[in-house]
Image (cartoon, rainbow, N blue to C red; front, side):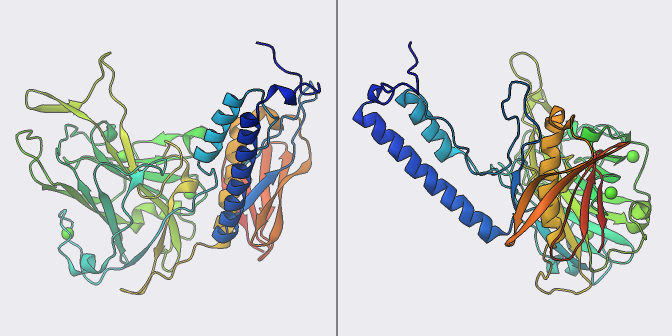
Length: 426
Ligand SMILES: [Ca+2]
Ligand SMILES: [Ca+2]
Ligand SMILES: [Ca+2]
C-alpha cells in the first residue's frame, strides 16, 4: 500500500469527507479528555509532572519521557481506520495519574483483646471497618469481600481481618514456608516510610505464619530474612464453616493478630509508640482457583499442568501486580482518641513524595536515559497547589539522588538511587 506523503499537497485529497469528519470528532474528544483530566488534577491536589528531555538519541530524536496522563499529540496518521483505533484508545485509556493511597485511623483499644480469631470485644465493635479490598491494580472488584479493622494499645498493634470464602482450605503447616501458595492473609509494614527495612506477615487458614524482614524492595536488590520473627506475635484463625471439607460451602475465615511494638522497635527510629502519627501499612489477600483430588484441595492447574495465576486483593491499591512498591501502601494513623471521626489528613510532603517515586520508577525502567547526566540537573517540574516545584537529579560518586523542595514548608524530599527515601526537615 502506498503511504501518502504528508508534505505532498495530495495528502489531504486522499481523505473522504467522512474521514475528515472523524478527524474533527477525534480532536474534539481529545480536547474534552484533556479538559476533564486538567480539572481532575486541580481538584485532587495530586501534582502534575512535566519532565524535561534528559538526553537525545544519537539520531537526533527526542528520547525524553513524560508522566503526564494527558494523551500525547501525534502526527496525523494516514488512514481513517487508524483514526478510529486511536479514538478508541483515547476514550478508553484510563488516567495514569497517581492514585491516592488509602488511609485508616486506628484508635486505642478500650479493653484487653483476646486473640482467638473472633472480634467479640467491645473495642472491635467501636473500630471502623476499612474500605473493602480491591484488586491489586485498583481496577477490578474481587469475587469475595475482604475487610480489616485495626486497634492499638501500649503493647500491641492489633489487626482483625474478615474474608468471604466459599471453600476454606489450607495445607501448609510449617512456619516460614511460602504461605501464599495457599490462600492467605498478608500484612506489610514500613514504620518510617522510607521503603527500606520493612516487615511482612502471611498467615493461612491453618494459622501457619511466615514472617520476614526485607532490607529493600526486590527492585533494589533487597535481602529477605525469613529467620527474622515478630517476637511475641499472636495470631488466631476462626473458620466460618469447615476447613478442608469440600462437601459444604463455607462463609469464610477470620484472622485476629497482635503484633508487639517491641518486635518492631529496631525498625522505627526513636522506638517510641507511633501515637498520633502514621505508619505505612498494606494488607493483601492471595486467593487461588482450586481443584480437588478426592477430598484434597490444591491450586488449580491449566491444561499444560501449570498453576493458574493467583488473585491479589489488597486494601490500598498498588497500581501494579507487585506488593513490593511500598510507596503505594496505605496510611495508618494511630490516634490517642477513641471513637471520634477520622481526623487524619495525608501530609503534603507525602503527596509530593508519590510524584517523586513516580519519576524514580520511570528511571528504573529506563536507566540508559540518565547514563550521560553528570553533576546536578533540573529534569522537570511539578505543578502542585498552584506552585511550580522543580525536580532535581544529582550525581555523586556512589550513584544519584532525585529530590525536590516543598515550596510550602521548605522540606527537602530525596530518593537515593537504591530507592531509600530521606526527608530533610527545614
Ligand atoms: Ca478476639
Ligand atoms: Ca523502613
Ligand atoms: Ca520468620
